[in-house]
Image 1 (tube, rainbow, N blue to C red):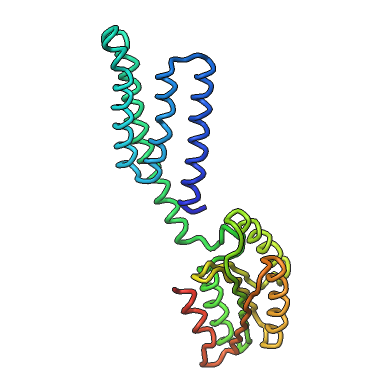
Image 2 (cartoon, rainbow, N blue to C red; image 1 turned 90 degrees about the vertical axis):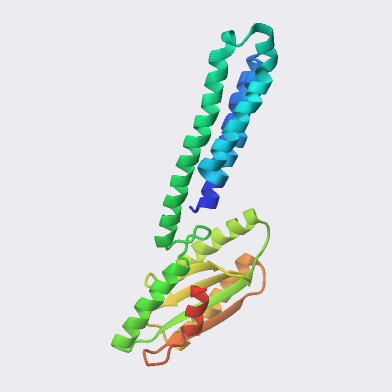
Length: 254
């Protein structure tokens, strides 16, 4: 899971939890100011997830200021001493939540970014990603040159389709069906491109004739799932000095 998706999950879960706590307090006839005070944790959460420590601390201080403003009528009425404990605990709670939560969010983002640097799995489809294809191409190119055994690559490209939710569902379905349609020695990947999406299948010890057969089957499979026209290419490396995969490598590196 990348940071953007993790942040979305954390935000949705946190806001739902804050809302549930505030709703429970409301139905238990808790002071309305305290209900509002509970809801103010939601924007602090959004700030710390978006901007880290600085955003969390800034919004924590802002929430503390708003809370003190809400408590001014009570302070004018009964004085500060009777409610000092409540005010101080709220202010410290907002600031601590913003600062410590922002620090934790920064650590999580760094960890996920580091993981993404070595991750070779595409989160949308469950297939490999561009990094995995580059590794597979390097491995098979070395093997082809050493043993003079050809290998091939088939790519199928198609544009974006449907809403984000529908697209994710179809991509997961596509990944599952592509994975079961190839040999265990083959490597399949899904890559997002400027034009949309691309499915790449690396076929060890496969000639050009075999690659054409795989290309036809893959084109039919992908078009049937995404429901739109697809473009398919195949490349074959026979292990000589030529590198027919160069254009594909350039696109992957970009």
